[in-house]
Image 1 (cartoon, helix red, strand yellow):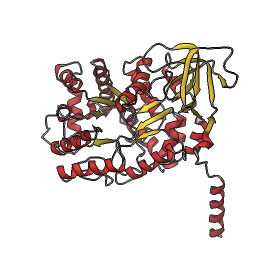
Image 2 (cartoon, rainbow, N blue to C red):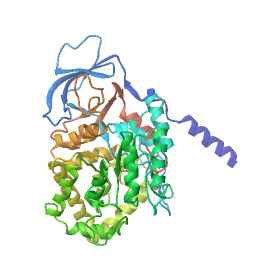
Image 3 (cartoon, one colour):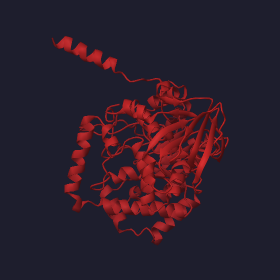
Image 4 (tube, rainbow, N blue to C red):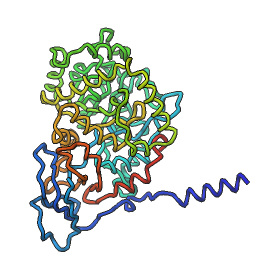
Length: 471
């Protein structure tokens, strides 16, 4: 009887198997598409233009002009009165993994099914994975997406973490020395990755070796560092730093060369730092002079702040029931202990730092980092990042610029993506409302165009829901 029941369950599951081919999620794929009567927020930081007509042909933006009552007769015309278009988001800290629920050891299962769909549904048309636990899977996913076999964003695959001795998850290789660092970088370049990420316990010499090898191939290295401070990394030649000042160890009194001090020391030191003071400002100037970018990942830190982020049902619906239950339980515990939490103050300082870095001329990038306590989910977290940049003091137009233009600039792709302009690839997000005046409207995604093909976010979300925490 149990065997019969199992067969029935398997048959039901097979009957409900979601579509896998990217074509199943396509809403618009006509040769000529007109987005008429739409508000254009082009990503350059310029003011929005109302009542425009944007024409898509051959996967590119053909023209942007005043709306017309007589668009081309051969076109698929969409009347988008009351809607806005922004460039596809460029997620610069967008892993394809998520913390496993109920774990006794830190494990992060690859989300090869749900995350590509959720990123695209959220308006993210390009990602940098910024650290891979399954780099071969990421590379295969990129091939499958590029060939149209599965839906998802364009991918810039980062190699496996360049971590020193003391990795907290068994999914990371621990570098043994500088030769191992060089070997690892060169091996993964041959395999096809285009970025590298140094991690918390890497040594000065191992980082230098990795940067030298990557730069010989004109590739870039970013880092979530702890054993090495920001200014030391800048002097070595790192191209980007992840997360901001909340992870910078250089000010901690217990900091020793090549050693990661206790996280409590880093946080206690940050609590006493004045972001507008000489210590922090001189560090910012040093980073800017070395042309080091900074990736904002405000959503992952907001998850540690009691009673934040706002509970969004779509975010919860995406989660495996066990993952949702664990996150909500963690959230309740944090709320009960809110008075003892250092995170409200740390979060505010992080936002102040990012604003100061950008205003000093630093290249600020946008990401989400779907790790932490599980609060951050692909796509939804990218939207939340844009909203939090506004909370940090940027205007809505500046926040959209950071999340689109700046990422494309860092990747060297600004001539193809990152803004809306004739000749550029038609990576376009259609949202209901006006995010230039009400940034929360960035959540109201109705169509996502990638290379001129319009995807249906509702279908993408439907097939991804319930899998975050599993696959």
